[in-house]
Image 1 (tube, helix red, strand yellow):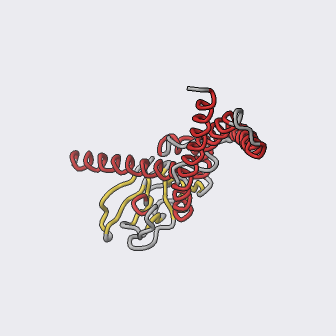
Image 2 (cartoon, rainbow, N blue to C red; image 1 turned 90 degrees about the horizontal axis):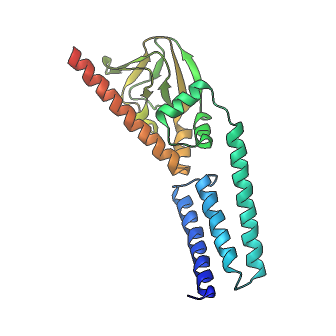
Image 3 (cartoon, rainbow, N blue to C red; image 1 turned 60 degrees about the horizontal axis):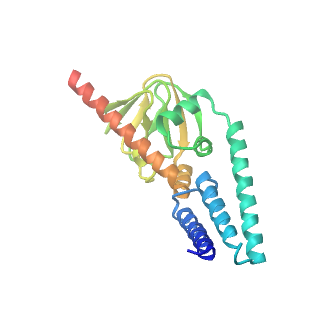
Length: 228
């Protein structure tokens, strides 16, 4: 294989990587500010730039070099943001417990959709048959779940409340009230749906967190039935 053929193959690889990264971006599998997207574009630009050694084109060189510089600046920016980004103890515990697959930047985006609240016993978190505007994460305390005014389950520390309808936008399937003074994270479901639609990684992490949470709830319910 000649040098020309090798460099031409490198350039075609770079072009293919450009197309792949843009396709993944449009399909929502990676975010425009993600490290993956930036690295893919940096690699693609470098490959195309190298291929121009044997087929020089001033305009193409300017474009590829500019793309390389912009990508490097983006990586440095993300690194610096990651270093200065701070999470409270409760923030970090929530992300580690429920959304461990997210980067710091993605975790920050999720946390910015809500706020921490100290609630009193009796506070209603969801109302059966009514739109559920918030996803709740219980950081302490607990809550009772009522279906047609009959208590059917209990939510404990570390549980989500409203996860079954958070991404669908459907009405709440049950009424949930705090049974003790509790601290909880309240995330706006409409904003969460928009973020999930924009970033597939966030969507997958949230869905995985919901599945694990539902599994824990079922195990707790089965254990409670067994002991009673």
